[in-house]
Image (tube, rainbow, N blue to C red; front, side, top):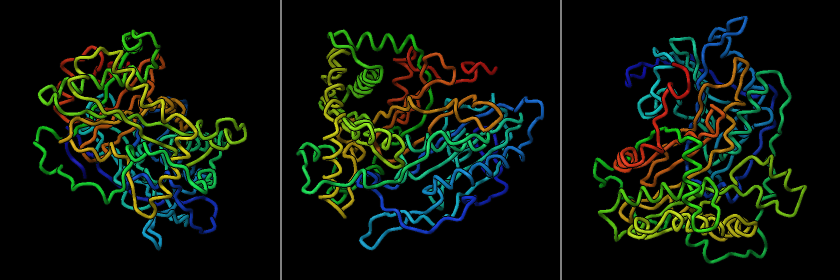
Length: 459
């Protein structure tokens, strides 16, 4: 039983769902880009209203559909049915043994419209999103007092990035509706093989760092009011247009992501005005699938189905005082410049070579290891391909869905996703220090609006 947040979650049955067909046990190495991820678990959840179809589905019936479809989907997505084991040199490797997915059934004595989605620390964390103790993926289906259901997953980031998780979620939903899978995953690691000889740009040493060179964490010495908290907001399409217009005043049109990120970077810097001599860092997660397939149509389709991590996190580092004083267009230009270097085929090929040169020493993105003592640091990861409306298991699309990623450490994390309202708005998951969140809510209340069921038109 899990209490708090004005409601209690009772976890009942636990099952293990394995692929419906027997699989030949084998080892699947992690790619060099997988090896850049520390052991991190990512959460994602979907909220559904009570089914109103002709034959009202019971919770048990919905769980049965979810489990059957999961067993079918795991035949193709067998990586999610395995477990991560260290190999002889200490690197993680995936044992594809069909150990299965831990599947929890739970009941929450709360109605969907009373779920405080704005504060997932209270309503989601440790309650509706499962803690993964074994394997690569864990699932929890929670029945709500109103007859609605929350379906949530937690997966090992070393095995899948958000793109990979998204295609799995859509395939799982397609299986539930007895549809053919629109996309079959590829685990062809040779597409991310290092070059011989390697070719490494020295600037990659500014982005990634061997873990052994990091100073001991000082998180435990942080003031209590600086702990990171999670919140979910929505940003209207009109506000996004306004942010883009202000960011583009220098004469170059900036993307919505660049414009939003520049605005947030400036707000975070202003919140740290008392430390104006410090430096603030902001990273943007870049997906390399389209970059690695540049100039090759065949590889484009192959990379489009690739399951694993194909990510890089370039970041900018600017003086807090300058971020405060310079116009928004200047900040947006800085964002554009540091992204520009990473959206190339050579960047990702070089990153693969960089990891190869450091193996088996584990490495990590330098911004993830940035302590708050150096100044505020956070990462923005675009979730615009989050297929929230496609995760329909047969009882209608979700009323709401979001990633949930309180990833630890002192570096913040922000993910903008499409709104389920399909009106151009964004839903934004924010995991930042409490003081920054309070400042943003006060000074940018016109942009960051708390996500409520009034907005989702459910009340």
